[in-house]
Image 1: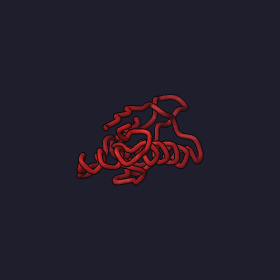
Image 2: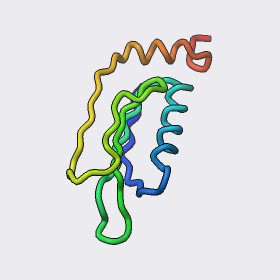
Image 3: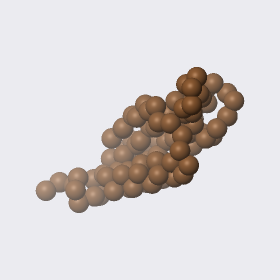
Image 4: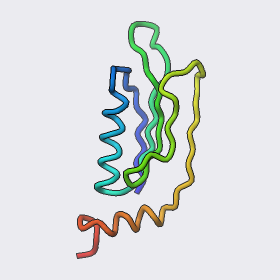
Length: 98
């Protein structure tokens, strides 16, 4: 029901949209709660991590952190009804009782 993804994905142009598409399509298809956290800041060299933590549920974004910022940490939160997640998954023919 809950997927946690702690990531160290560096910044590329339009990569945030690609992340969103992958996460939203997966949770829309299969249902579930997806928690995504990404490193934020520079590694001291040429690599920059853009943050963009997010919470998605059943194909919808519930919370999205800023992509860039000067704060070391940014926290996002959302209230989720896990029974709604289970109902969504049960309504899918892939997860329903057979």
